[in-house]
Image: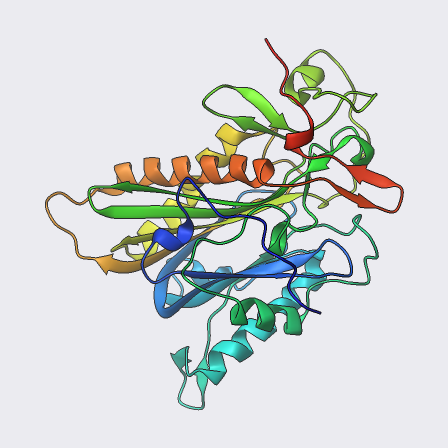
Length: 342
């Protein structure tokens, strides 16, 4: 296995604009799947909010404010459904080899929570991210703006599956950042949503379910409200994953709150969202690199910044994606279809 070529970088900022954050992708060449690691080598205060009803996660309980561990050293996002959680083992091995982790007397223990999305319809499902994939993602990690679109955890992502996979469109991975008062908040989103992706600034559908002839965007929200019936769904086959990072100084309680309110960005950019078939999960990391001053944004402003970065990154995930063909299944991208007028 080897990483595939990168697909372009962010023009609206990136999560790596946050000091202390690195991102690396691994994209499997055997089928559209992969994983993405977000590293914080010096450790970052962390929180999480799991909002979808069908999550696949690892080490999220320890991020509860009442539990012991304060800082994590990375977050793993992966395809492959629950099998993809194995990619975390490779990230832990990579970090341990470099002496990065929590001192537990008998060794250095890297803390790497993880979440996965379901991309098994895309090719031979026997190929999914494993420990070797996670290690390779760490090897590729840097503080440069990460590639977007059909890479890493977004390689096999689809959106708009409520009326069948054959009418879906290509999802992907995207990133964005916002800076206010010397503090930066960045987001990295792997969008594999059941619903459509909406541009919050225009309220137009960017990518999602297509009409029966496959040539135009349907607009899932309006279709459901006028009584069109969705196809039966296999539970847990969708999910949007993401990481919000900031260089502000946060407590563990505040990091969990930031992860919670960042879901507002998903609600602005995905419709429907947080469904029974989605495992939507957002992590928050604070590298605490910017000391607080009288001008430092408080939690209200940070929350607004996080939601904005998440919404922008979600839209970028589908705009950066490109069409794929796997067997008889052709999945177009946002670049292939014009948004409807009205």
